[in-house]
Length: 374
Image (tube, rainbow, N blue to C red; front, side, top):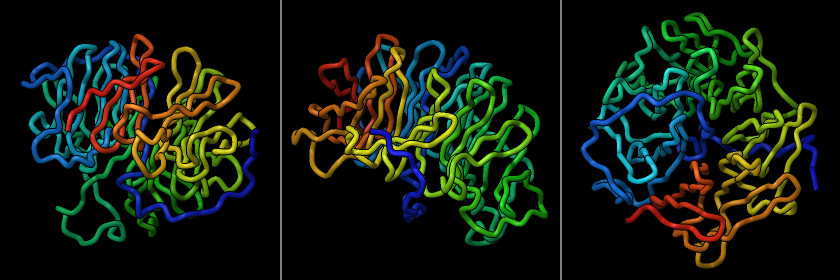
């Protein structure tokens, strides 16, 4: 049963910034720019030396060519071409192997969001996107030392006009048109273009956790201050009432034009153009702590959740599928960990699931096959 949201309890959010953030995981709409010089490919992924066994597969993306891309919180990025995996890490130009967002622009470049900046492929390697004169407000950093001014990027997407949009931990929303940067932050009860004279006093007022472009070209994003917001190119609009209480981890637009949200404590939320409705465990969702979502080619929507304590052998569920009529939780039998952080579909209809404890699985509708080893 649908539950229209009028009020939602506010909970502490920022103690979980590095683990409870979202990124765009839907299929992109351009041709890949090839990256070919990585020396190591694997048919199954082994945990790299020195990488924590608790590392997550945190985000995913399918490019125009059908390759799957997976970002991890410690092992960098993996590309799967249908036969083998290729790893891209600090050796290929990333400043950090902590990856929380992946996207593709209309020219085919792959963009990677990390906790130390935004990177894009430049031929056979990755290159940092340099932001001229970037400086955080002093209230946003622990000291005035320039070495502390790392740009923590949590989500990225490319729009139909070739712009790159990315959201940050404490530096607001950014737009890059290939030449110039525009930075938007929340101040004086509104989102506005940032200037050196702007009044940005709260460290987390500019936090942006997820971004998606809709079919009309509006940019939707989630903010810690306002909840659900969209930008039509001229002004910002906060959607719904009291949406700042909805801690959104990922957004997608479905084929009907509805906006779906995976939320921290309010299960799965849906904005149908008029109201925001919530679906919880009592409605068939496996867990009220939703983490990610993806619309498959058949119209089914897959949701990942943070699961319950225990192991997959207990029959615990970390995934829910919605067929347009009902929510069906799926037992995570065969998965070492049911804390799901990303879900995506490959070209032959298999659903790929990324979890904590360095787990990556393919689901064919009956069984989970693991593609990682500890």
